[in-house]
Amino acid sequence: EKAAPEKDKAPTEFQMASVRALPWLRLSSWTQVQAALVECLRALERQESLSEAELPLLRALALPSLEVLPRMAGHRTLQASLAFTTSGLLASSATKLQEAEAGLARSYTDFFQDCGRLMAA
Image (cartoon, rainbow, N blue to C red; front, side):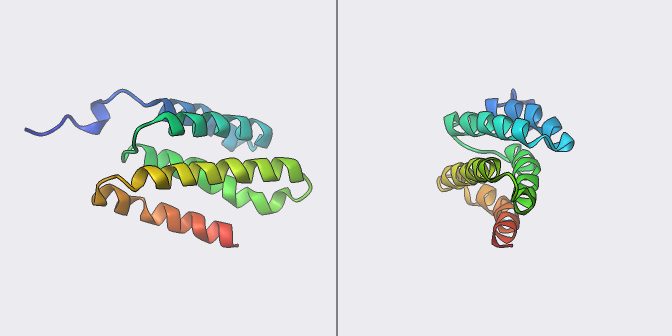
């Protein structure tokens, strides 16, 4: 018997926190983004595992946050805080994927490679 499709599952706490954070990214209100990312990180850390449903949300949160960091040189405290929180999202995701099935871990590979390129830049 097949498991119910993921789309039928109730959204996770992380998914709900991410949806609340995304409008702040569009507005480039980085103080609010930082606060919203902290909420996302806490929710993600409380979660047992990751699914395919979290991947687009993680991409939508982490990549813009990493892209803006070099341009925040005049706001060192916010820059450091945003970098720390975004790194926490990546680390928490990677930790949860260590015990995930191989297919799910492979689907996150491009995301981590994209993050790595932005962090190296």
